[in-house]
Length: 99
Image (cartoon, rainbow, N blue to C red; front, top):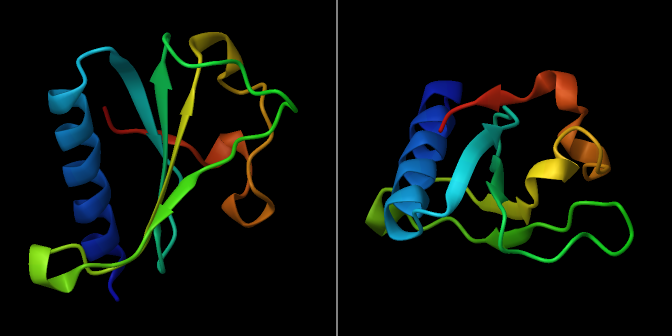
């Protein structure tokens, strides 16, 4: 899978999620060649109980132009750059704001 395809899917998912939930603020993408990794900032979600991001994971769905699996997490604005990411996601310095 090409990195461009993963980025295209990440941007699509970020835009669709923001369109369907206008309370989503910024969206951060953690680039990877095998899956989409998004953190969406939302002020109406609970604070992480253990200081770690816990993404929801979704399978790929090539029929609907989603060729790679996705991991999407919701955090509060004050948790940006403070909560721990899953180990394989890297660190906050890798985050690219895409929405």
